[in-house]
Length: 336
Ligand SMILES: [Mg+2]
Image (cartoon, rainbow, N blue to C red; front, side, top):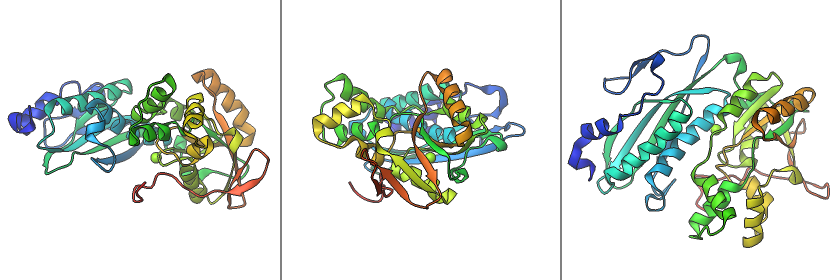
């Protein structure tokens, strides 16, 4: 079945079930000219959006609808997490080519809805239109956070310690398997593939960091460690020192790099889409926050470096030598 068989309104009727999971603040959801909802009092509203274009960001033949929908929402939720916020409402707009089946689209919405219900996010509308060739998907997510708790990129201070909430480089390794058509025939490779396909937004972790006063800056890793920590350096006007031996590498990435002859630290530095949070913590509060974090999540905050006043971005290797590094993340305008 294709969109032309049921029409736009038939399609909207089909996918609008299960979109409203937190009706308390909603005046009008899907079904009117505009959605109407009230925002949280005494909180600022966060808005983030992400546009995914077939053949630029994904291959329709290499993904399921579910995975595409799930990841499209996950990347938006990750941006809310990086601000220390709570996600609230989502809007999904989609341009559908004639050869795209309704089954694929329903599956796509199921992926969105699965993650939305897990994190209490309503889907309040969007737009549906035809596309001549490619599938195009845009999601807007709103969130809220108390202004004094909001995490920004520009708050890092010299002396701060830099942490990551999780492993780095796994998603890039997963992408390498997809691009090169390598079968994920072991637990390790399957897990890397999964990191790329179904990233989990660090929303609870972002809220935890936002509640603690010693957390000065945060960002989520979408373009890659070197690139995203570079945003903190630029916005905060500080230098960065990372320790290559401290960068958290999963045993899956180490296995992958041994198998395919890559340097795991390079994968971690340049690989994108890990969607972990990078944060900078005041040195006098870092121990306390890291201990509470471990107690809360049963996962460590990984110390990876420190903020300096030199303005330089440097990586300290295992022999203690400093070498400069550049932001080398995934660049959407540069072909691989
Ligand atoms: Mg971001």
